[in-house]
Image (cartoon, rainbow, N blue to C red; front, side):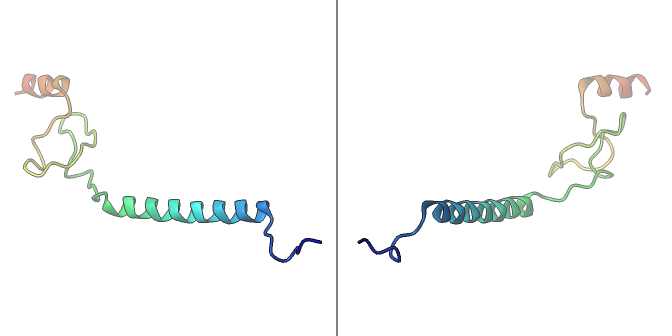
Length: 78
């Protein structure tokens, strides 16, 4: 007879593999979220429509527009 003690059931191995994959995915997601810079909507928003824009290292605050249409609207108001 074969020894039952030495073998591990495949379903147990699949369960362990799934748990490990979930844990690793969670850690990777956590690290990725930590690397994304915090965005402030008040600093980086279009001055015409108020749409939130990505931060830029040289231009900040007022004076930014999100599209050519907003730029035209702003220029017509001058």
